[in-house]
Length: 192
Image (cartoon, rainbow, N blue to C red; front, side, top):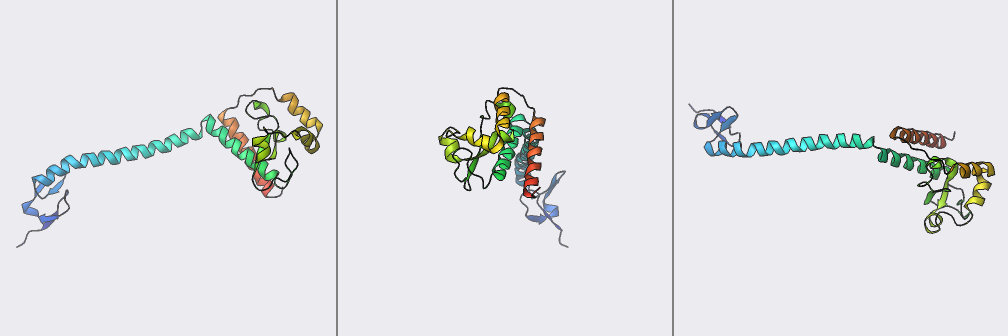
């Protein structure tokens, strides 16, 4: 009567069950297979564990970074500028008055880096040709005049009077700003 065959845990070959070695961790062809498995398997398990831990850490790091101030600030800025580009599509450049075209910037009247209080004020940001924003320092000499024509002298005066006010925003504040502009984009796209 022929013996049953069992598969070796290490080399995966089949061998007669009574000619192999049975151990608590599996069946082996011989001592060499048992030794190879014992020395190789912990390294593979360690690699798999390290990969799993790295993947879990990457997810947690992403969640953690999503709540960090720079991430929230960048997200608020991106959605704000997207709103401005949608709002001002088809309007002339606030500086030179020429058509904006398809690729244009959301340019600030008072620069965003130094004037935090009005950084996200919609009156302070308008569609601007790339050449005016990048090569002419953000103003080709007519931004103020054209801004007064577009929004009125009173609103421009508000920007002038409040530009030096400082405000320190939290990650939650930036999240609120992001939600505000996302809502405005939805309303613009729905024609509201």
